[in-house]
Image 1 (tube, one colour):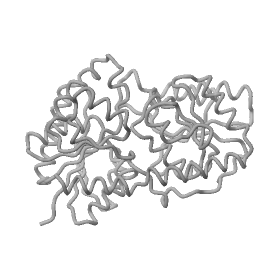
Image 2 (tube, rainbow, N blue to C red; image 1 turned 180 degrees about the vertical axis):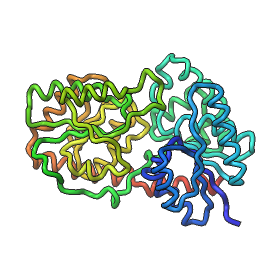
Image 3 (cartoon, helix red, strand yellow; image 1 turned 135 degrees about the vertical axis):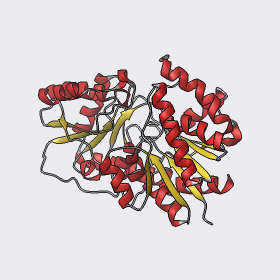
Image 4 (tube, rainbow, N blue to C red; image 1 turned 135 degrees about the horizontal axis):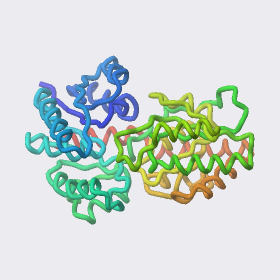
Length: 370
């Protein structure tokens, strides 16, 4: 009988994009795979059309009733799937999923995809998360980290045992899927593109302010935004529809909505900008670099490892709109040949250091071991 794997995801979009290859390969190797997640009906149907067995278990916030409901749905999904192994991704599945799988005796492999302000914030939700992490990960079979800084923090704080911790190169990049493309579209202006959820710790406020500063200097530059408004984060971290509408009305950005396939938008851009405060390993930077677009990002964990300052793009200071604007101006003023050289170096770096097959192989080893 084939082994049964349950994947607990925060949102189905990840299954359709960055974790598509891992999920497909597990199925190709004979595993029965069930994905417990949530998301828009269209995205859930796309995953089912791709042949994935998907169960919508909803999500949770800090409301105890929502958390209890979410955990009941996880328990039911895990029992119905008769899971032999469970894989969890992101903070909610990592915490609540591990509690449920421990009670059910299911060995679990957890991926710490990023920690955001987990250790820096005194917000009650993050204080609770720190306490919960220390409890839930002690019995987890294996824990993957996407960068060395996060792994060191968890080890130093006694959240995980050293023999269970392993660093992998993020979600990895498929260099064939994210192949280089010539600039497309009819826009003759220099196009900067922010891609990401519209939450403040992704640096969207700094990007908008940098766009204001830049437009005063260079009228032939346009700053575009691609990504959804996001309500699953803490209220203080979210961008409202009213804020987004005001930026659009002001003309400081062009909003492109959201998409499951970023490639055409990267192809229509000259440079991708992600001024995030901290990442696990940024998938957007990997994807843009693989498509030979030079990137601008912050000198911070999960970003600086991908972009070599002055070689494959530029690094700016965290939460500093003026420094970001300066780096964007420098990028826009570079000769096209220099930017193209940066892009080629970027692709060479990420295909060598972040190839998705490295991630898939690590998962197969961990699954077979547990």
